[in-house]
Image 1 (cartoon, one colour):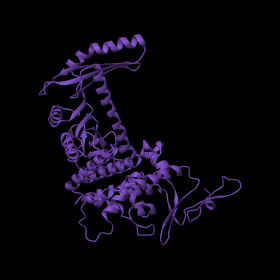
Image 2 (cartoon, one colour):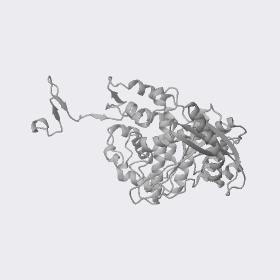
Image 3 (cartoon, helix red, strand yellow):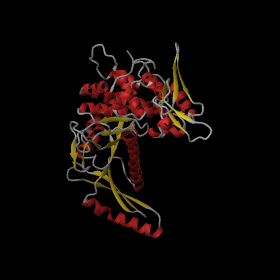
Length: 459
């Protein structure tokens, strides 16, 4: 660009319009690119989730400049807006919307810097992390109760889904995992399908077996549910590799039902071979996809008792597919076997939640050296997911946003430019009248204002 087209004050002069020169320059006033976060912040204020999150963290500093609540708001809303890296906050600490989210006025002093936020993350102790785990479960139970009109069902489904999280530094307890062929953490994520709430986001070392700690997590969730409703038991779903004799025994002893994927052993393959052949024969004859089911009592060498195994034989243009599941649900017919299997397949929706958490909200950014600091980071990302998920799961929210990914929320709700003016009595946030997604933000804002405030705890 010629020197005369670029000014020393950062102004750029473009000449692609024949009638006028286009001047591009930074404005002198208070501007933001993330005005839509205010609607989410209003919802958060009503339900009080982030306030309760912060109450789990102890603050032993003397006369701090930045409160824990202010800093947690920075991190959670940064994640929602796509600034998942702690370093981003060196640039955001003067951003007026983030100041308002953190409880400050646009003209107040800057927010916490990256080193200050990192000190907060590294100060967390194991006892505080356990309090956060319990809080996430407590919030999930509240959502289930609200979803079912004030009553907790007698049977609540939870989906277990471990996920690999590649690491690239010297993080504590990151190890090389042979199956994934990488250095990694191996978090366990447990969610509930009707609310899509993440009940547990537990960081585990990189070589953890898939089911490590799952029994303790199930007991923790079950105990919390039974404290609220003594009749409630869980229905546990998990992929192959998560189940095992100890987990089966525990579920049966405690009154929980389960469905787990099960590996194809040689005896099961021989038993199901005729089923697979029938599926192939029917497909060749009809040209239509075939799904056939069978069930039997089966006892592996490591089991203390026999259990029901269901086989699904499938044949289509893509080829043949033979799968097994193990369950303690009653199965007395092939129709029931198909019903149980289809219920198991529905757990695939938890992978969508995992994708939103990892890719939509950047939950893989666990780059602190200290393991507990990375555990807190994982909890922050899960909290951001749950907050957004609770906001969008309501009839007041437009249909196109109820199942929309975080990236869509950023495009259509969060990422909107605005001019901010602070007066004696108000802060004015003005959005362009030509912005096409104002009706969506308007509906989300009205949903936030209608959110019920939590009831005061009984004395």
